[in-house]
Structures are given as C-alpha cells and as structure tokens.
Length: 115
Ligand code: 5GP
Ligand code: ZN
Image (tube, rainbow, N blue to C red; front, side):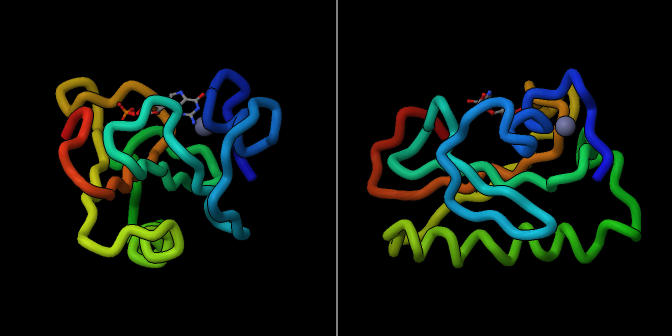
C-alpha cells in the first residue's frame, strides 16, 4: 500500500499514531475525528495515500463508492438515526487541512459545535 512517510493519516493507518477506530477493512479505515464538530464525527480514509479528491481517477471509483457506502452503515452502528452529513474538503479553497483524502461523516442531535 503506498504511503507518505510525512502524512499524519498514513501514520494512523500504520498504527504509528493512535486513533479511535470504528471500522477497518482492506481498503479503508474509519476513526473518530480528534476535534469533533458534531456528537458523532468520524473520518473515512483510504488506506493508500491519495492526497485529495482532485487526485482520483477512474481506477478509484470502487474505492470511492465503498467509502460513501460505508457512511450510512457506520452512522447506524454508532446510533445516529436522524440523518447525517458527509463532507470532503478538497484543496486550499476547499478548506482541506490534512492532505490525505478523507470523508467527514457527522451526525447526532443538534446543535453542533460547527457545520
Ligand atoms: P480537513 O480540514 O482536512 O477536511 O479535516 C481534517 C480533520 O482531521 C479535522 O477535522 C481534524 O480535527 C482531523 N484530525 C487532524 N489530525 C488528526 C489526528 O491526529 N487524529 C484524528 N483522529 N483526527 C485528526
Ligand atoms: Zn497519507
């Protein structure tokens, strides 16, 4: 699996930085965001290093479908039963802070801290 040695999320995938995991399979990892915006806030990331959504191609279609399809399942498992928000920030103007592709999945009763 290609990894970037300077990437914080690659280090989480490798277990070099701890995370509160909610799901892991051969393609992706999902874990709780360290600064949650909502009562439930998880990040779904590919295990391989892809910097941004702008870097994906047709070869990533199955991976992206898998990431999106996991969102409702994870929210159900985490007790979110009244809707949720999915967000992918891309690039500087998109407000991306960590340059390893990730999908935010947020839910739980409002009000939320942000979002
Ligand atoms: P972005 O702004 O790039 O879309 O979001 C990056 C997210 O990663 C932020 O919500 C931030 O709280 C989260 N984050 C950054 N570093 C870590 C970390 O080391 N562990 C976890 N669990 N989340 C992190
Ligand atoms: Zn990475």
